[in-house]
Amino acid sequence: MSSSLNREERLTLKILIAEDQNISREMLVKMLANIGQIEAFATGLDALKAFEDALDKSAPFQIMISDISMPVMSGLELLKAVRASENKKKIDKQNRIRVLMFTSYADKDTIVSCYRAGCDDYAVKPFNKKVVIDKIKKFGFTIDETAELNQIDETKQKEKTMGQMVADAIEGFKKGKVDLPALPHIVQELQDLISSPNASVTDMAKIIENDTAISIKLIIAANSPFYGGVEKTKDVKMAINRLGLDVTQSIVSAIANKGLYETKSVSVKQLMEKIWMHSFATAHCAREIAKKVSSMGYEKAYVKGLIHDVGATLLIKNIGENATENTAIDINGLIEAVFEVHASFGALLLSKWNFSKDFVAVASLHEWNKYGDKTEREVLIVNLADILSCKIGYGFFSRDVGDFEDNRELSNIQSAAMLGLTNSDLKVIYEKAEKDVAESASAFAKV
Ligand SMILES: [Fe+2]
Ligand SMILES: [Fe+2]
Image (cartoon, rainbow, N blue to C red; front, side, top):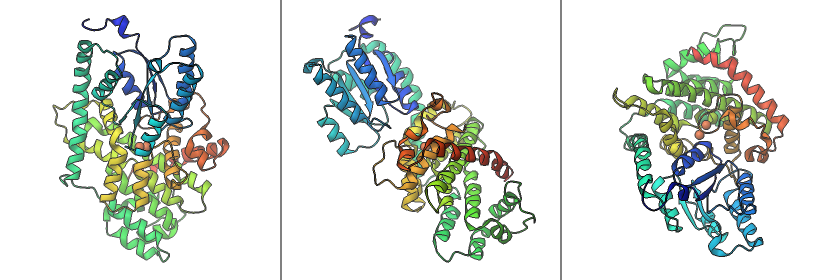
């Protein structure tokens, strides 16, 4: 061990982290493990409690790193509470905790409010180890560079490979080097058709019949036990007549969407299956939520649930398929790298595909945890559906079933509260979705 600080001294630097997204929190903890003593919390309230306990024990934290957007207590609220507590205890300026805020959006208004509330610096996600360390140094803390360098090299190399692969894939899409799959046309065409007041079975059949593969798959799905009628469906029109326009739209969207998750790449095959089931479950949850909170548009919510993670889907698929036998794919590294960009990339894809604004909004905002009063209902519905999909065992990214082991009150989730859903409503919703996912997944297994 060398240079400026020995291990004991290094570990006297106490860092408090508040970040609700599991992946991001774990990344930060890993990043800073060698720099100080880290305590990380998923909620602002827990972080505040740890901050106060440490103050009471005269072993205060020197640095706080907080996400701005967190449910229940935002980063800004946490910052205000921390400063208020320091004021009350008459802690002088140089002994106050140094606060670094992180945001997913370079949202000027929020940043200005954070400065007003007393933050010392801010950075925009995704986290970059060098940026975080430079900011800590700027606060006036010394960091053991040699010990650090080794660690940076190791993580950086891993991050670089996965991060670089993700960046290359995004470039490929942006430059049109990658063929976009067939999803957009039929899903969007049906969406447009269904929004028009004169939509007819004939019009819908015409759109679907243009794609023979999808037509056959629709008939197979329509004849599956989940959708099964007395009379066996033989053609597209019969299927639409029996299922109705809305349900047909959902089935076709699911079929078209499912094609995106198919891959020959062995390294990401399992991951793609997992994200398909996650999207499918999110769609079912979104449909049940929509049924409870609005009088129409269930199938629209279903389609939005299906495509909410399209950015992640296409990135992972592309990376898997372009990897040569010699490229080792570090699945966790890939998930981390994709997570940070999937929402904005999904929004970009959907706008490129000429999807309407409401679709783009869902892709871009579904991971957001702090919603304003004017947020579109469908964004809230998909955000909540995404979370409920974990509750029924189909989680992806940071939201794991583990999040609910502590019996967190589901109605405390901001989107649930804004939609006016109680715990018992939510139970009915996810139980119905769980049952439907289990029963209808087989209808799509063969298509
Ligand atoms: Fe997502
Ligand atoms: Fe998701």
